Length: 205
Image (cartoon, rainbow, N blue to C red; front, side):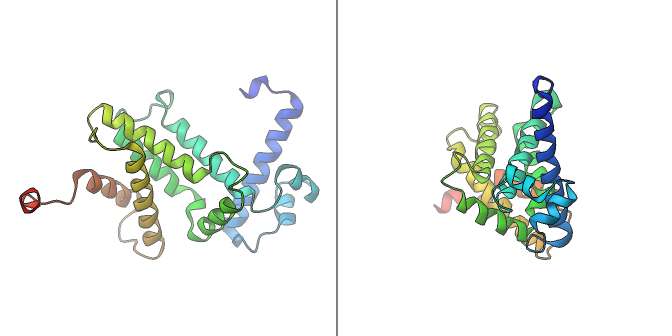
């Protein structure tokens, strides 16, 4: 796709990517509040005014970073990238990729949520909704191959997975790091799919 772009378009895309990379690096090193637009522009080797050609505000760069990560996840789940054959395994892979992204730091998550709420009228699909849609598609595929019950709404299941995922992420970041995060997330999915009910549950109800 990039080969079909003009030199000017390629340069604009490269500049945008440099700004995003610089912003993410500074947010991780100094924190979101301590990083200024001027510093982001300097780190990307562009003028401060150039920043505003690509992003209206500093807040606006956060949804762009989240969208970029979601595109990477979508690509990683494609057959061309030799993604796992199992849809459930792909769900685990997607969650681990989200967890590994610096944007999942609790402070940045808060800032991202605020930025998304401020821009909710300007976007057809927010990155947080896009993650739910991505998971919903994998859940639907899992239902087709019998890995997940077919009588459940994929959207409901994906929303539940996303909610539990972020709860586990916050708990892990708050200090419960006795096991590696990918292991914790895999256990979460396995437990969710296996269920909590004991053998006497159906009889008691």
